[in-house]
Image 1 (cartoon, helix red, strand yellow):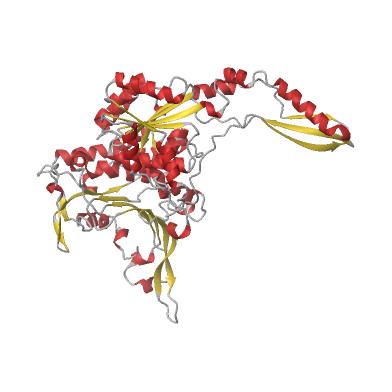
Image 2: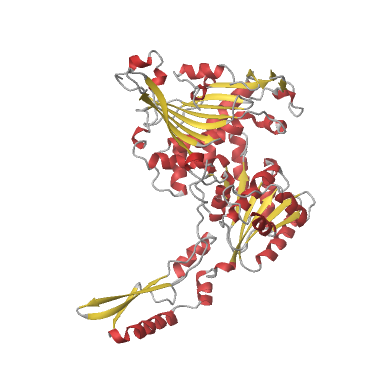
Length: 599
């Protein structure tokens, strides 16, 4: 799939005072009108307190006029305009006075952003974070003065970090010009400092290095915690106490998992809030940054043909499907502690469900959208154990190749009951979705790799063409499919007459295939989320009450599964998953949409 255009980047330029002029005639007398505007002041990278202060005080000593008009003779028109303009400028507070009054430097070159990747030597940093930062730099989405710092326990020089990072950087397929030059420029902005995650002394040393690169400018700092969750709090404490910005904003991106149940999640949130305000915490779920997920609200709220249909009256069921065609190779130890429900369903799929099912928000403001998502989560019916099917993949021989079982992983206990597959039926008890089953399915080592949303509509009442479909009524229903990955697409299944003299019906797709429609390469989800964090946009990040509501939904059934030691149904590596998932769907008169032949 390709993007509509290069990433939309907000301008960091600063244009404090703008003048324009126009002539007009009133009662036969000519006037010169001077339009004066100060709306160009950029608020990007301002801490909330400073911005608030600037709104109150920034006009001290300034002539507050939108228009100045005075009669002039046509011959003196140009000279009069210059005189009035000069008079206005002389009454405006100087840049230095404005800086002192408003609390920030009006010069764009006097602010800087430093992104510190905590855990810089890990796989996530190498494969996702550094490449995403380079892509933003390549697209000119980062401010003029930015620096990237790597911080980890490993001993490493700046040159060694740059060498490590350079191996993972790539340019857009459609934008290869000056690729090598851009990489060199980006790598020159990358630096490294080693230290312990729980050492305030080490973070104080990091702070000194950050200040050297800030050079006295307004300091804004973003810390990305690419580290195991058990050391989140130590790193946040040290960063907050010893390496926070003194005069700008400080933000922290926290990677999932956010605990493993309601209790541990609440404890993590409480500990984080000892050192950070809620608006400083950016809980990242990279699925929310995917192009098709972000397009959900656009598809629904800006297309009249969909919005009226988005309810129980027309929708029969909604399916959220996630599958991977590989196992837990390399991360079995981590995965065994969480399982597929915590790893995929409680966060990725539930977040997509909340976006899909929410009511129309008051605006596109982050808080308005997140408020509606929380309402959906709080309206959901508690999940019953009988509405959940779990499975675990076993060894399988296919094409002469032996594929390992989950418990063949040396880091996984031989008697592990951790599910690598789960399917569940969820319900939203509100007026819009009452009685509509939302079916989730997620698994590893399945027959294909995909993530998609399938919306199956109800049958046409009194359909004149029922006899043409025989007994397979599923063929007679429309289905909207949003394929999140791979090969991103949106398509609508419709019934259509096959050309010919007879009356034979066929199911066809109205297909928006992104790769065919758009020539631009799609940005990675981490690019969008990192840019949003830098700009302070929280719409795609998870709020604490949203997290609480999500865990409240899944914690009871997770505890029941573990306390009763429910044995997962075993399925062969590379298969379509446990048979139990099909029985679960059939119970609600649903057929999994990904089992059809069309792709």
